Length: 147
Image (cartoon, rainbow, N blue to C red):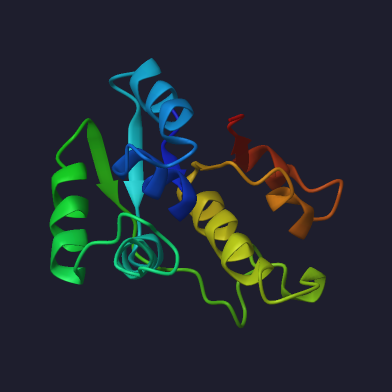
C-alpha cells in the first residue's frame, strides 16, 4: 500500500475539529485504517508553527501543545517518518525551474519527498500538481481531497 504524506493543511484539519475541512480529512484518514502515512521535518515544523499561530488558527495552542498534538497523532495507524532527504539544489525530483512563486516551493518539495519515498502527497490544494510538467509521472503523486 502506498504511503500518504498529508500536507500541513490536511494535518491541521485532522487536528482541529473546528477546521472547515475536519470532516473530509477525518473521513479520508479513517477510510483505510491500516494505510501507512508519513510526516517529515518540513510538515512537522510547519504544523507546529501554524497550530500555534493565533492569526492562522482560531484554536491556536502553545507550540509545546502543538508538538504534543503531533506526537499523539503519530501514534495513530502506521506512521512513518521520512527525513528531508531531497536536495532542493540538485535533486531531479525538485522542479525548481517551474516554480512561479514562493507558495509553490513547499508544494514542490513535498512532491519530491513523496516521489523519493514512493508515496503520495495528500492535500486539499487542487493546484498543487501544477508545479510539475503536464507529462510528469509525479503528477500521480498528488492526491486531492474534496471538502
